[in-house]
Length: 601
Image (cartoon, rainbow, N blue to C red; front, side, top):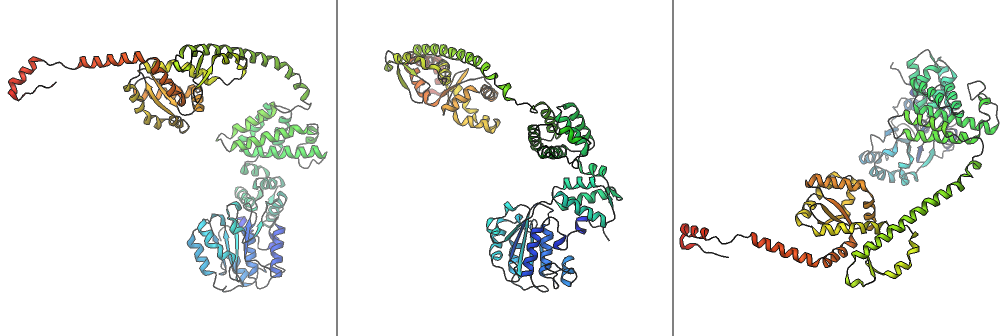
């Protein structure tokens, strides 16, 4: 006969043999005894906690011909057939592979037929959350009002994926994780029945790794028995599970509490070399630190939870804040393990950080108190210097703007302010009277635009249509090379004028103008790409969209004479370049074509 895995061989056959779910099994037994069996049940909980086993026992008990206090007898024809999976009235469906509408419709069509051998037709749908939404909808009406002889048992590990309309039509039972003590008792019972020797420490390691799942525990136990059939020993358990030796974890914890990073790193590396994983080391450290904290808070002297001698004596004077700090750092390291392939790095960072930043036993408040008054004069000095520098810059910029503002409609004593969304006219005297209020630091946009103003004028003085078309032509190429976050910049920028060495780009939003002006790296990247595709270098000059029309209009009015002269010169050059009537050419044409030649200006 083929070998059968332990979790299959020792699957519970009665409610009393189900471990750790007494409240659920008692409820199901009482429902059978009192004849109050609902039409639909939903078993939800972590893997390996007994959901499918309880479903099979319940289905077997519903069709048992010789019930024993709510338990199946396991001797009648129906019970034996159910144990062998040949009971025609008990149908097990795996929703992971039968999750379509057609499979559910087939169930819906067959439920109307009466059971052939038992009292009930029982449908066990495992991993029901895998059903498609169409399948759930097809099941709704049948699940709500099935025939009297039909019982549905739905099992899932992910209750949140089951629609609320399904949950409301069932009796829900939440299966909990099985405690370590119950796991250990069950494994010891099985090993005793199999006549296999074991070490208690090895069983404890398996229970720790199983994390509340009986199936996981028996699978690990099966793996250990394959490794060594004669016995289950502690050393093999550590090697198979990747767990670190308990006594070494105690030494690592003591090193952390003593702020000895070197020793902690060496011990951790030794455990990693033996096959322990970073996750298991961190899990064990958290578990031991938590138990140590509980021991200190409860003033207990129970040495049973630790292996090293005098461990309690060594940790009893450690303040509780140290444990809180250590556990927090370890949990952070565990979270970091999910985002890196270098599993050793978060562990090593945790060991160093836990030893360097462990809170001292003494209260830290008196040490921080004198720091604040000392830092205040330094900050005030720096702030004063910055305010003075800003004042000086604003005065200089104001003078430059006044000199550049020659627009007649502004008035004699008025200054044009370029950085606002709408052009404003501000009396010069009023600006001087409000100069003490310059302490408000929101002036970066004015400074940047004022500096760009001369550059905009320079571009407009030498602007050509050829250069502007060259920049516009590379815009689609920029879309293909920039990152997704950088492509948004192209949507708010538009080239509006270009000279042989620079291009003016207007920015739709003032906030984007500020951010783009401050981001030198992005501007350099954009410039380099334009140079690459246009085969020519163009420096970028930014201007807010709302200010562009005002700046261009002001430039045209202030340079009207120069622009007219330049246009006139271009026209004259074009006329001079046109070919004159050449008499020799005319005579030659007449010789060739005769009087058919017509001369036009």
